[in-house]
Amino acid sequence: MSRRGKAGARPSARPSGALGGGAHWLWGVHPVLAALGNERRRCRRLLATGAAQEAHAARLAPLLARRGLAAETVERAGLDQTLPAGAVHQGLALAVEPLAEAHIEDLADAALGRDPAAVVVLDQVTDPQNLGAVLRSAAAFGALGVVATDRHAPAETGALAKAASGALERVMLARVTNLARALDELKREGFWIVGLDARAPVALAGAKLAGRVALVLGAEGEGMRRLTRERCDLLVRLPQSDAVESLNVSNAAAVALYELVRTKPDEGSA
Image 1 (cartoon, rainbow, N blue to C red):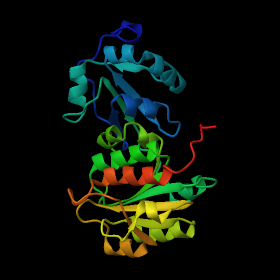
Image 2: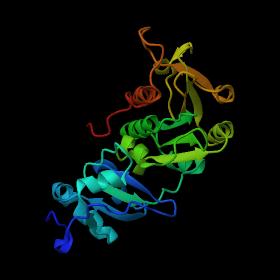
Image 3: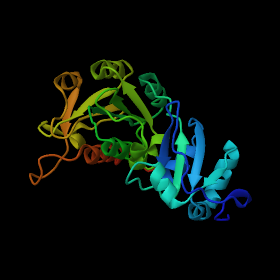
Image 4: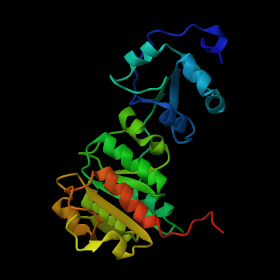
C-alpha cells in the first residue's frame, strides 16, 4: 500500500481529532485491530500512517473492507497532536463509539456449560491501567467477564483499551451501580462469591473451587469494602512471601485466574 494511502492522497499533517456523540479514540495495533474485528463495535474512522498501513496491510484490508471504511493517511506528528499526550499509537488511531455494557444476566448465560466459569469483580479499582490489565488476564485465562462499579472505576477510554491490548473487545465488562446488590444477583445466578484477602486462613488452591466462581478483588492498599466482604461466601489468599505486603490488583487477578484453570485438562491434549 502506498504511503500516500488510497488514490495517491497526500497524508494529512493535522487531522481533526474532534469527536462527538460520546465517541472516543482507540490507538495501538492490538486495540485497533481487535476493535475493527469486533462486530459489536461501531467504528467511525481510521487514521493511519503510511508505514503502519504497509506493515499491517494483510490484516487491515479485510477488516476495513468488511466495514466499508478506508484508512485516512496521516503523518505521525498529526497523530501525536490528535491523541492524548504520550499515547503510544504505533501509527494507528480508530474513532469508535463505546461498547454496549454487559449485565449480570449476560455473564450467567455465558457460564452455561463452562467449568470453571469465572468472573472477576473489582471493588473500586480506579486505575485504567489496572482495569485494562485485569481484562487482558481475563481473556488469557478464559474468564467470562469483569464486573466494575459505575463510580470509582475508569470509563472506557483509549488508555484503558491500550492497557487491555485488545481484550476490551473480547471480554464482557459489566458496570453496576451497587456492588453489594450485584454480588447478591451473582449468587442468585449460581456463582460462588470468593474474596481475595491476604489474611484469609485458606489458600486459593486449597479451596478447590469449581463451577461458577466470582473472584472479588479490592483496591490495592484498601482492599475490599466492608459490605463487599460481607457478601463473600469465602475468603481466600494467594500464597506469597513476606517480602511484599500485597500484590498489585492486576497481578493478583492474573495469579488467581491461573490457579482456577491450571488443574483443568488441556482441551487440546489427547
